[in-house]
Amino acid sequence: MPTIILPLSTGLAQARACVESIAALPDDPRHDVVVIDNGGADLAPLMRLLEGDVTVVRRAQRGHLWQAVNEGLDAVRDDDVVLLTGMATVEPGWLGALVAAAGDGAAAATSVTTVNADLAPVASPAAAWRRSDLRLIPDVPDDLVVAAICAGVAGHGRVVAAPASRVTPPGTRNTAARGGHPFGGAPELSVVIPTLDAAGDRLRACVASVQAATDVAHEIIIVDNGAPPQGFTAPVNSGLRAARGRYMVVCNDDVEVLPGWWAPLRAALDDGAAVAFPMTVDGVMREDFAAWCFAISRHALDTHAVAPGEFLDPEMVVWFQDTDLLHRLQAAGNPPRLVRDAHVRHGLSQTVASDDADLRAWIAEQVKRDEAVFFRRHGSVLVGDGGE
Image (cartoon, rainbow, N blue to C red; front, side, top):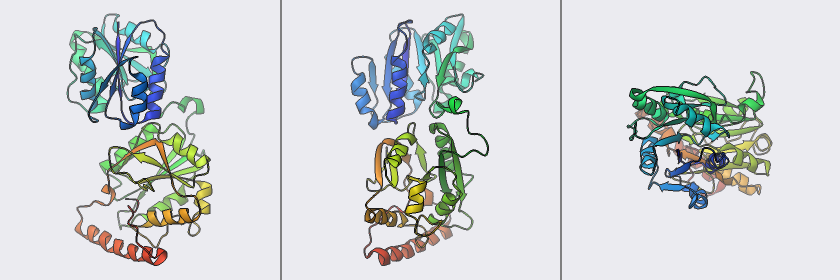
């Protein structure tokens, strides 16, 4: 009887969708499920529901996928193992087709995705193999775990793709239904990312997370403010002016958005919030307004701008503009709304971290000037994160 190993990380909505798709599988073939709580604090309600129905492996803190899978393998009783990664959702025939392909003279079989039927086996989110052929996943990056499984069992036979075993990775669920995002069409969402390093790994990781975890038509607007530095306000305002979406998100380049992040924010905006912002997990969180990632509607953009085309106050260049916006929204009776079902990670203040001594000195001097502007406007100083 095959055992499905299901690692879950942060992102309650996507984790629930993944688990529900597994629960909807037919009873044939019979199967066990081992769910691994890979350090997702927000998954506690889901884990309580799963207790008793499946085997739950709880990890003390979030770790690498290969570590989580190895702990799951320790809980497997039979030889046939199936791994589903990335909290993907599965179609009803997924398991039967995958197990059948792995048992047809192959050492392993992999699923295909609903958006790419020609996906190479090593790039698949799901694989089936015999535990006796591979009992330990090596130390590899998360996106290479299935590739490591394929390599690890290659000495025992072929690795084949199972075309009838189909999964949908997060962020692509609705792509086929909406026909993609045609060039020239208006996106639902515009994500504005100011950065001091448009070629850096931090920005690449941020963009990759938006692309992977956003399941609506969207555009990403990157504003390079590194030469010369413009602070935070000017690039944000220019990015918002360029945005074509019905909704906009301002996102620091040290933010990682997590599966299921956008729909709850959109719902809050549709419910009347002027600004909505997600929970930050695994790090520092401000519950009044965490401005390193926040969403606004086009109506709010027009209503709460300090001047045409200037949503953030341009007199506060680097710091305090988030707290100024907080004060303005509070005065309007519609303060920023924390949306606990939307989740991101944040590398606190990495966006202004620099090895350039001149740049650090410019930032420090500008922060003092911004503080003076804020004090003049509001009569007191409430230290904010400045969106950084």
